[in-house]
Length: 114
Length: 109
Image (cartoon, rainbow over all chains, first blue to last red; front, side):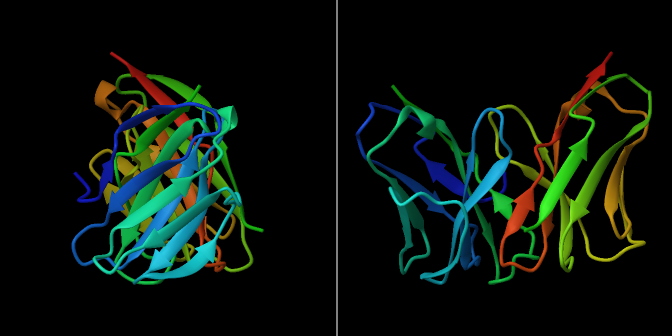
């Protein structure tokens, strides 16, 4: 158990809908990272927040957005969903604002768009 | 842009048959190289971080090594419970970590 929690575990929705994925980092970690993992692709970095502020952006679509709250939990919002958005979404946390710090991953949310 | 290539894509070993997984990387300046293990449908589990060429780290049957262009994950006398996908990732200094697609390891009893 990494100490990172994610809810829900599974999410099934329809095209065009909007969903919110939630992540709670390990106790004491200030950075939260979001990743997408599709069937034939590796983990794709989406976005990083550190202590409430956006710090780095990867291959995140404009339909996707995220935020980190004062209690340090983070939410990833996915809107106007398409079939291709079906994937595993992971969040990870680390203590500082350094990509070279070890990132500890949550169990993931499996999103299925029908 | 940082690039990570892992080989082979899949590897099937008999229990006890040692082997190595390869991770080749291209970065402007390596700040850290990471190895993770991922079981199906689960989140990646951290194994090792290597920071500079020549560094080695060990954990049970696993040993990770690093050169200026690649890293190896050596698996000695593997057991069926070592079956998983092994992911390599790099921090090349762009404030993000780039992952390879992974090597899927199957250890047969």
